[in-house]
Amino acid sequence: MTRKVLIIRVKEGLRGRNAELFTGVATKFSCRIDIVGAGRDKIINAKSIMGVLSLMAMEGDSIALTAKGADAEEAIQALTRLVENDFILENK
Image (tube, rainbow, N blue to C red; front, side):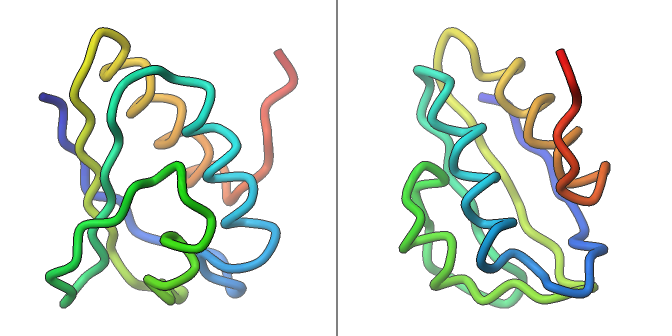
């Protein structure tokens, strides 16, 4: 299992387009990816747009990601890059 805590740094938070980009990256991987927002007990499937939106993560909030499966490390790395690049996709 791989775990990473990230801080949302963009004004829009993890809503709208950012949530769509986040779940889009998450669905590229076969592993199970869960997300928990700061101060929340609910574990959300990171591949679910409705679930990610329900976190209502705002600028400055932290989110904890956990991934289990064959490509867990790669998934966490890709989602970390997305969040740390302020939801700007890399051209690869």
